[in-house]
Every structure is written in C-alpha cells, then in structure tokens.
Image (cartoon, rainbow, N blue to C red; front, side, top):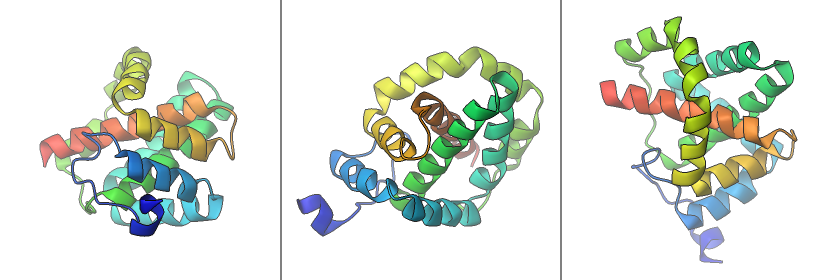
Length: 166
C-alpha cells in the first residue's frame, strides 16, 4: 500500500540494477494502461537521444531476424522499457559519438544475432522485476511478451553501452 501512496522512487543505478519491488509494483499498474504507457514513452523519446535513435533500430533488427509481428512485439517492449527508464532515471539528453557510431554500424546486427538468447536469459535472471513489468504492460497489446522483453533487452544494452562512453 505504501507504494501507491509514496509513488515512484528514483533509481539512479537503473539499468545496472533491477527495479525495486515497490517501483515494479507501481509501474506494473501504471504502464498497463496504454494511454499512460504512450505518454511516458513519448516523453522518454523526446528527451533521450539513445531511445530516439535506438528504437527504430530495434524494430528493424528484430524484423530482419524474425518477422514483422515479432518486431512489433519487440517495439512494444522497447516502449515499455523506455517509459520505465524515464520514470526512474535522471534524464539523459545527449548521445555519445561512440554510441552513435555503434548504433549505425552494420556489425551491430550481426553481433546481435549471436547474443540475443543469452542476453534475454541474463535479463530474466538479473532484472526479474523489470522483465515482469515489461511482460505485464506489453501483454495488454501483444501475446508475444518474450519478444517484448527482447525489445527491452536490446534497448537496455544500447543504454548501458552509451553510459560506458559518457
């Protein structure tokens, strides 16, 4: 009950650390509403260049590897992850030149093919609260919640790479 009275607590160590239990409970309720999800997703992309640049890359990459239905599910998961991050993190408005080069590299797609499954398993293991929020919120609009979580995984990886170069 305290979670809903106190609201969301900033987590400056996210995405290196999983969501707190309280934040996960609050975000699961909030982001299950598609309108709320859309507002926070759009806000996240308006202030964070990694999300603005990375989100289309996630969709294109997943579509090349799988199909358009799975790409759409991954896009939903990406939107949920971006909304989560916008609500718990300090906003990042810039993108490092090294990250921009990494995102535009043709090798990024090839490297991604080999790491997606292990990254997905690691995300479920290391970020169970975040994975649960992504699954819950995305299940309102897609049955492919695993691909939604995959979208979140790829977006988190972009964010971690960018943080390492800033």
